[in-house]
Length: 416
Image (cartoon, rainbow, N blue to C red; front, side, top):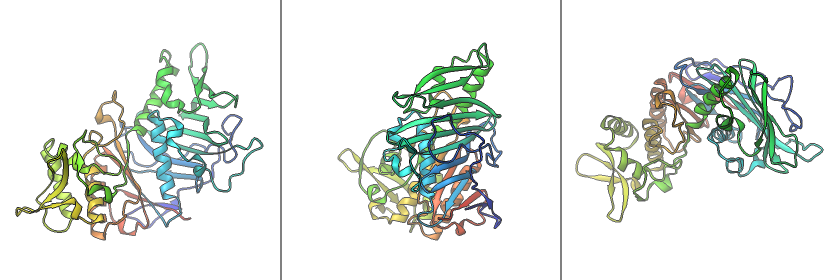
C-alpha cells in the first residue's frame, strides 16, 4: 500500500508494523501493541481547526499495523477486498464513539471487525484495535482504542496522549464488572486521578463530565480531549442511494440523511436560505447532468410531500425519477459538498463556534455509477471546498488514476 499526491507519481510507505514498546495495560487483546507516535499528516493549513490527520488500524478487518495519513482530500484506492470500506468504517466508528454513541450501536457485528486469522487467547477473547491523531491548537493528540469483540463486546483499553504524555489510560481489571479502571493526568497534589468508567463508551468523550479543570494538568486533559472530540464529531458518512432518491418525500426537518433519500426535502428547505450557495449548486449540477439545467428545486406533489426536479429553463421540469443513477449520485454528493453541517445529519460540537470546526465527509464508492466527466467535476468541486478549510473529504474508489493533476488530492493505494 502506498500513498502519494494525485498530482505526482511518487509514493512512499503509508503502512508499517506497530512498534510501541508497551501494549495497553493487561489484560490486553491478542494482536499488535498500540503503535508508537508517528506522522500526523502533512497539511498545516488552518492550525486553529481540529482535524483528524492520521488513521491507525493496528488490527481491524483486513488491516494489520496500518497507518493512513489523511490530508484535506484523501482517496483510498484499490480493488475489491483491499480494505477501502473497512478504513472508512473505522473512521466513522471513531467519530460515533467520540459523539458518545454506545459501543453496540457503533459495532452491530463486531466479530466482522476482527482480523480473520486472529486467534483467541486462553480466555477465548478476540478483538480489534483502532486509533487516530487529531491535530490542532494543542498539537498532535493521539487516541488509541482496544475493543474486545468476543466473548462480550466491550472497550478493554484506551489511551489519549499528547506531547509524549499519557493524559488518559483505561484498562479492564475485572472481567466480571461492566467497567474499566481509568486514570487521567492531574498534576496537582496527586499526579493522576483514578475512577471507573463504563466499558461501552469512549472514555475520552466522558472526560468533560468527569474532570473539574482545577489544575494545569486537568486543563491540559480537557483541552486535548476537546480537540479530539471536535475533530471527530463533525463527520458525515454519505452513500447516496439512487433508488430511494426518486420518490417524493414528506416535508421534514430538511437535514440530509446518509443515503440522501430525503434530498427533495433538503432542496425544499435550502433553495431560499442562501441564493449564492444555491446558485453554486445549480452550476455544479449543470456540469454533471445531461441537458440544460436552469435550476434545481423541489415542488409539492399535493399530498404533503415534495419531489426534486430540474428546471430546464424552457418551461419543462424533469423529475429526479427520470435521472440516471450517476446523475442522482452526482447531484447528491455536490449538495453535500456545498451545504455543511447545518443541513447534514451530523453532530457538531454546539459549544464550539462553527468557524472553528471542520466537516469531514466520508464517501464509500465515491466514483460508483459516475462517468469520467462526472467524477472529474465532482473531485474538482471537492478540492475547491477542501482548500477553504471548512470541509475535509475521504473517499473510496476502485482506481484513482483519473485523479492525477487535481491539486491537493492524496491517493492511498491499497493492495489486497
